[in-house]
Amino acid sequence: MTVDILGRAGQVRAAGECAPRSARDPVNQPMINNWVEALGDANPIYTSEAAARAAGHPGVVAPPAMIQVWTMAGLHGRRAADDPLQIMTALLDEAGFTSVVATNCEQTYHRYLRVGEHLRMTTALEDVTGPKRTALGDGWFVTTRNVWYSGEEPVAEMRFRVLKFAPGPAAAPAGADAVRPVVSRDTAFFWEGTAAGELRIQRCGACGTLRHPPGPMCPSCGADDPGYVLASGRGTVFSYVVHHHPPVPGRTVPFVVALVELEEGVRMLGGLVGVDPGEVRIGMAVEAALTRVDDGLTLPDWRPAR
Amino acid sequence: MIGPGTALPAMTVEATPTFVVATAVATRDFQDVHHDRDAALARGSKDIFVNILTDTGLVQRFVTDWAGPAARVHDIKIRLGVPCYAYDTLHFSGEVTAVDGDRVTVSVIGRGSLGDHVSGTVTVSGVTP
Image (cartoon, rainbow over all chains, first blue to last red; front, side, top):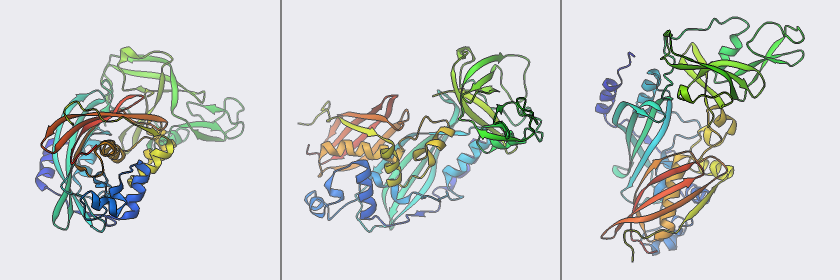
């Protein structure tokens, strides 16, 4: 691995808070109303002037737990290039820790917010620790700290921790030195599919029969008019081997190669990750787990169904 | 009298698909796994699932439903456990763990069919249950 995770993390941490992101809208009653309606929160201080004043507020206040809502990036939002979480995510993706799960969210509210206040939020990298072995696989914990400002006044803070991990304890993902498939005119659609996050099954354009592995002609009717359909990604282990020796480039032994029977009926070979090799059983339910190796290769792996 | 061990009234939330989608949109979280079942399946999830901003909101609601409108929420610290998929039911329970002057710390657990979905602590003052 050539990615210097801790070194880069040190630089990002030293850079401190990124440029603030402004909320799209000021704190406003319609968004508060939508929120309390969806959450089923009947606390009247969020909707009634009289109730808010009776509770000692100068008027209606926003639910403290809405703090993050005001600065969400929105439907088409993208994180800024200098966003520390974005930088560390990209770096860990590159290092093979491609999955993410949030583990902790801690918010502190310095005061209640009034309708009309316009917030800005900054993000700083607080900590990066790893690699650690977790139940989900080897990974790194990335902790960021957000501060919300109303004018120059910090009004709330959040510490947010995610685990960026490579799925599965025995699931060392294929490395960049992985053995590459030979892609032909017959199989290109399949590998383009995995790269696009799709598991594709070849289907005869004449009689509709599904087939795998792909080939130029339909073994059922002989037509040379192949198309494809998308697999659901669910199947069961039809057979498997546990590979111990010899070593295989891009894989850490032992690893499992499974012949999976898809619910569409065809069978497909792939790595079975996220499971102890001793726990694999014929008939176990599995689901597709596409493993992105790099821009040129995404492998059709499998993992136990959840 | 509120003291360590004081239990909060239970709260149940039916995480219907409508709830999952409505709360995701109300929290301006447009990640597809919170509203698009096909996308959620393709990413390896069983179904669409409740987002984190909603978890924080539900934990706050659970505490303020008990603490009353005059209460002030100072912090909400949650740990995230198993996902809460659409059609699951969340059962919230909690109790007071510490009282420091006017400040009350409450521990909260939100449990679904898969186990603990969210757990954490909330600090409030001005509690008038």
